[in-house]
Image (cartoon, rainbow, N blue to C red; front, side, top):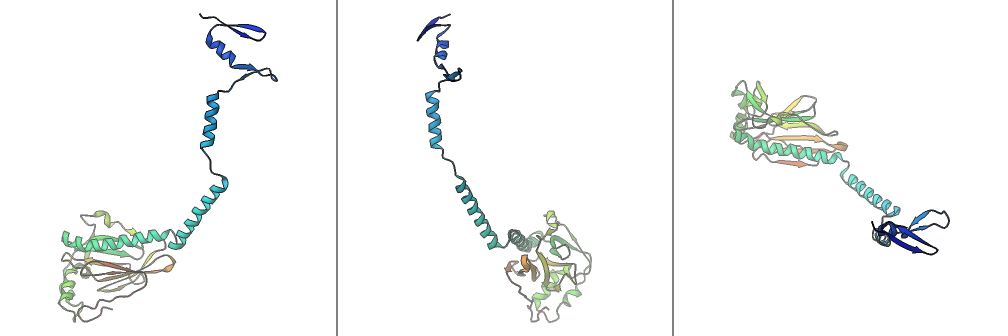
Length: 262
């Protein structure tokens, strides 16, 4: 054991070790309370001063200003788009048109009669495959007695849609497409026009667009309404399957072969 004697004014103190002597030297008596006050470490004080000087904080005014700028930017975006539902409606329109163009080519690839069925009551659409239960070829030539050869061929390849008896089943390659795709709130199907005529919610519960395995699809015009009752028109090209979306209410009629389809 090491013994160290430390001298201080007026007295000598005996310590058991140098460490104890050092601890006692760093402690001084508080003249007012009589307690022991520790001397602050110079290195710790310097560290605290350095840290306080190198990390400035935001003031309350700065935070309020940032929040106000974000709020104004969000308001401008909402005013520009009308509402948050705008993006939901745009996504639904894009998915609908993509499916139409996809079915035009998929019907030929799978050698199946695909159909896109619009349900006016449920405000939705679904995709299936037509399986005809009866064949009546004479009905196709009664579609338009003045139509040209191509219209006859179109009527023949769209046989399941014109037949009185058919069944729509889930697509074998894409069964999930048979599930109804419901339109967002505030968006609804107004009517659907194809080569067979005009279908409306007041007259029909459903309307279909048929896609032939021979590379044709039905001429079709879909009218929808979106938020604030704004019109949208989708035109389907029967020869290419491509679609065109118009931000207004337009009407198109099938006139190939010399006679308009009313």
